[in-house]
Amino acid sequence: MVADFLVGVPVADELHFVADLVWPVALGAFVIVSLGLIASSARRRPAASTAGVLPGLVPALVAGVLISVPIVLLTAFFASYYSPDDLPQQVLSAFLLSAGPVALSVLDVYAIWPPLRRTVGGAIARASIGVVLSVAVLGVISHAFSIVNSAAADEGIVAERLAVEARSAGLSIHVEVVNAELGETNANGRLVSHLTLDITLRSTTQIQNSPLTDEDFIGESVWIKRADSFGLQVTKDFFGLPADIPAGFDETYRVDEALSKMELAEYYTTGPWEANLNLMGPLDEEGFPIFYEVRTVFTVPEAP
Image (cartoon, rainbow, N blue to C red; front, side):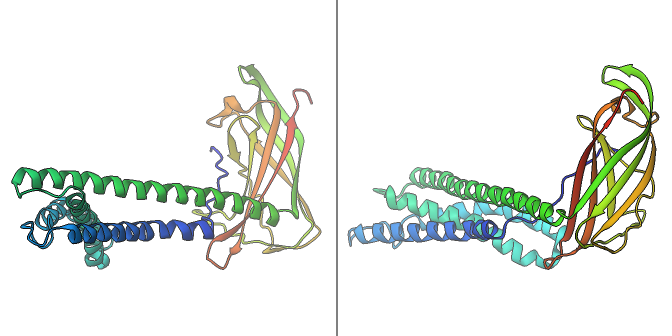
């Protein structure tokens, strides 16, 4: 089995809060600017203008509805399967977030480029430009949200890595190679067909552990791997660690691993190896599990 040491983490609270504000703030600013532009254009129109109370209102509404129809239908289709209780709210949100920006963008185009007379061609041209403008506005907002959200995720990963290191500071493991049965040499080096290891776990601080183990979930695990290759999980029932690992804990476990029949056996060769201990602690205040992670390196020699 290939090791995967990545740990899922929540995003940083501050940047996540900012990311949540990107859409409402940006859309609110767009609405305010659009209304100001439309109102300014209305004040500039001559009193005797035949353009109507709000030039472009009909093309704006038609364009907004036409653009929103497929979006609303897709939203209704997926919401009916995945969240039927929220169907009305999601359909309404999809309509407002698609028809609204399109209609405002068309009115903006009419405010910037007022028609001399009403023609079907002019209405279609202005409506088309308004649709393109709305797509550009929503694209810019979406890109800004993506940047902030990505930064929040990166910050969250760094913060959680530092938190895991702090929680794991009292833990350490040491690996001693008791015996290594070697085979032939291939392109990756001298093959290791069997490993006997003594893995010592020590703790200088009290660690609250959650040794949950069943056939679907393991709350504690050790992986060993060639430093530049793939990892495998130690198959021995290595643990049975106490729920509260006391300060001064020092236990050594004998591990025997037959590697010759492993799927990736050709990569298990002599040289530098790495051992990784993962423990899952209790849930934190937000309901996320606390993880402890400790690594160490050892060498599988080419000669006994």
